Length: 308
Image (tube, rainbow, N blue to C red; front, side):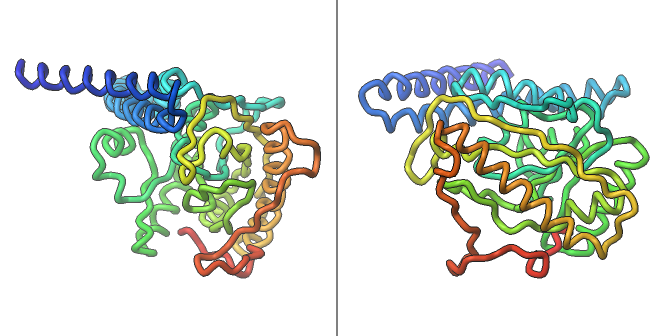
């Protein structure tokens, strides 16, 4: 055990030294900052996930397991924010994050940096949904399982529907909120845009009869743009929109609910991006969502697939 701890310590010191080397190198070679912040981000992720496993066990023992993901999210906020120099400024003038419960929170999904965004805005008594394959990922998967994440197996539609049913029951019975990314994957977009929305989050909200709370994050390709090897320090605006009620809605209303919510978020995305980049109103380039074959998609309710 002593030898294992020794080698683990050496590995940690070496990792930190390598990260600091690339930070220093970035003073003369700007692209080195990308490598430095990527290394710092992954180290933060591992450390916070390890803390999350311990915190989840401890909180479960004292009957506060629903706070596990909120507690660990805050550790991401401070550790990863310090290590990368990036933070998200959350605008929530009506304190929806603190007062609307239970709810289905939804947000746009850009890059892996969204884990830091969740750290900055994640509400109490909330959990995330995740692909079932993440259960097998060391540290992160262990934490997510212990902290009550809702796992969805996209390869098995029957299991996915059962997972949604379980989430709806938990929302109602335990007043447990859920955070989801309706785009289903990261966009890695350089300009403000939204991929077509999958409808799982909207089916879940309607099934549980709880409000949808959109959370919109400005396009932050000026801070992180993976294709261009850009990763800078910076502050990114994030806004919590007013809750959208679902009381009395049924599955027949989901298409329209999905469409109107996406349009609302897209408008706010453009405004926030202009704010983030210091542009004049209307100067931001609008990028349409595209399918894998490059054909533009209007993302109407008829062509969206159920993420359930």
